[in-house]
Image 1 (cartoon, helix red, strand yellow):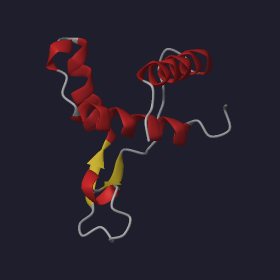
Image 2 (cartoon, helix red, strand yellow):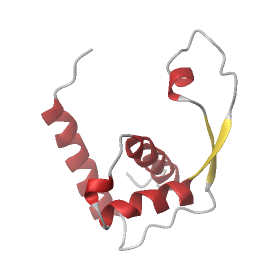
Image 3 (cartoon, one colour):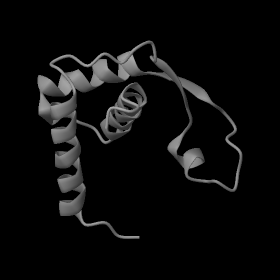
Image 4 (cartoon, helix red, strand yellow):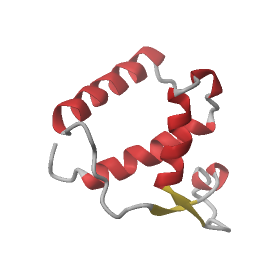
Length: 98
């Protein structure tokens, strides 16, 4: 499967606009801080049961992402995983809003 980079960025922009429209200056995520996590290799190998589940933490992910506001050259590819987890809990917290 191939995805056009421009379309990905357009979708990100659209979702960013929706977040801006639907939420106030602060977003309350509720009590969902910890979540189940597995390695990316295990996540995308649906033929095998995951061998090990780990625990992730949204507050830790957000703390790591906020460092990019100080130095955007500090970005690493794993920040996409952290941002994805933040989007998941944002969706969970906004059920029924949009």
